[in-house]
Length: 314
Image (cartoon, rainbow, N blue to C red):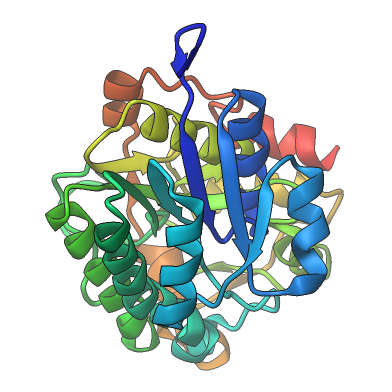
């Protein structure tokens, strides 16, 4: 079925109440697609229904629950947006902070792929992550041809292994991976902004480490394009301006009406926040969005975090 130039699809969004999931559901519905979206909480069914989706309770770590939900929805495409990241950041203990999300990226991905195969779903798209975690050799900005960092810090090891697993199995199955940069926007950076306002988010060492950002609405719009174009392979979904911490963090503070961030030496940051924070702030790599713009025709509402931070926090 077609609506204008858009082929109407039945889209199954696993993780529809997340910060990107909600925006993705809204955008898909607005473009005429028939959306089934999942949540782990019966209390959130109304949120998805208000967005125009058919809402389903599903446990992504239960193969039977996943299989039943997918079979009933009979989708043309599955979009894996399942995460369970505690809103209170704990970068020093990243392995604990991301423990359930790591399982959703491994076991949960396996369950969704198995359900897709069983139900004959031809298209599969999964969320991944690319903000600062490029391989720490060579240039400061990485493409999809460059590997992610397999040693992003001791406590980040399980996180990177889970991300690597997800990407490998999804690409091997003929699906698409959307690597989101650091997400910001309503509901995505509230905790970070609060830390900045309390001057508890310092620049570490030289602050030379790069990060890539993307507004949550832009992350969703790129994912819609991947769905509609039945794209394959890996796409970095980031804005046009990878930048070092010594640039974006003071700017974020200024936009939030906060005092400039403090600066702390690497040794002190390592004691207080752990190795991952030090690596991110001093050695992190950004990512290029050239492939997504070229192959998907993606146009960003917020091409730079400078515009996005300013509009979002003014």
